[in-house]
Image 1: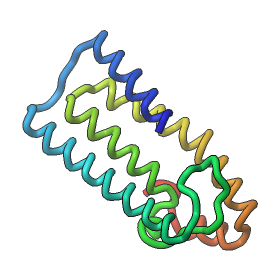
Image 2: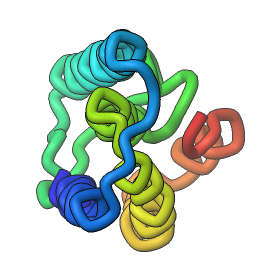
Image 3: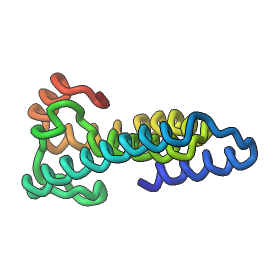
Length: 141
C-alpha cells in the first residue's frame, strides 16, 4: 500500500504542475467508481480466503498456508490487482492523466522488487505445491 500511495502522490504532484483533466465528470465518476468497487470487492475476497486459511495478510509475517482458491484461481496476486484497481479508480475519478500514468512504473517496481521476492519466499516455504500453482495461475491476470 505504501508504494501505491507514493506513486499516487507523485502523480498528483505532477498533475498539479501540468493540470490536464480528461473525460466528462459523470463518466469519470462512474468508471472510477466501478474500478474502486471492484478493487474493494477483490481485496475483501482475497483477505477472506487468507482468514479462512488462517495465514497472515501482512507480508512481514510468515506464510502458514498456501491459498489457491477464491480469487487465487485467476491471479497469484489478487491483493496487488485490487490495489491497482483502487489506484486507477482514484486517478480516473479525478481525471488526472499523470496520476494514472504513474501506475505503470509503480506496477513495474512492485513486480520486480516485491512480487518476485515474495515468489522466491513462497517457493522456499511451500516447494512443489507452489511451483505447481505458479504453472497454472498467472502472476497478474
